[in-house]
Image (cartoon, rainbow, N blue to C red; front, top):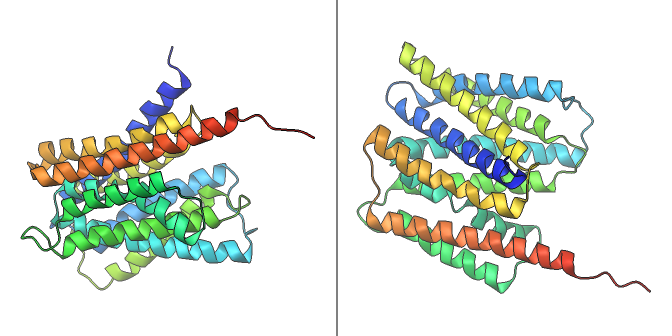
Length: 298
């Protein structure tokens, strides 16, 4: 009989596998189908799927505050930017390298939340973030022969996702997360569908159509599992398993693209993952200690 923590860990690993498979499918389409066409066609699939889910959950309505509407617009814009910069980087860089840079997201998000949302950040977590950023520098290695504009694109994608998640944190609980997800998917579809008008579309082979459909399925499946996992087990136990995405990136990059990162890249990725896991453990430890402090009454 599986415990809630075990089920949660398995779902988190499955979610990371789904997202990384989506990346691999998209990378396989590089050079065969134009970028905007890919994003539009995948967007149609994800928008329809998330729209149906949101409708069945009763999450589609217009009862959204003016403040949350602006935050939804910010989130939609950040989602569009993240899709553009991430996929450009993915098409030109090894899968594992891009995945390794994305592992810095929890560190960057924690730092940004402290700076822009005034969330508390102790010296230990600050140290973990700084060490993790050193790992990012080892991955991208600015100034070296392997450094190029697409490394910057991957970092910009992380920045866009950080803005997206900060906007999501600022939204009130009255705005359903599923509706926000549907709005973001729809925005990506419409935006890149408009841009695709100005480029010549490529005829879809059965292989290309299958890859786009597979990517859409993986995105929706990854999102659904990432939502479900937050309702099972202890978050402090489950969250570190998000870093299994690095393992999937290495494995799929090797099997599907015959890629293997340089030693310094692997070392940098290990630093980033280690810093993130330590920070998550520290956060869980503080929460457990806070729950044990007896409440004094007058």
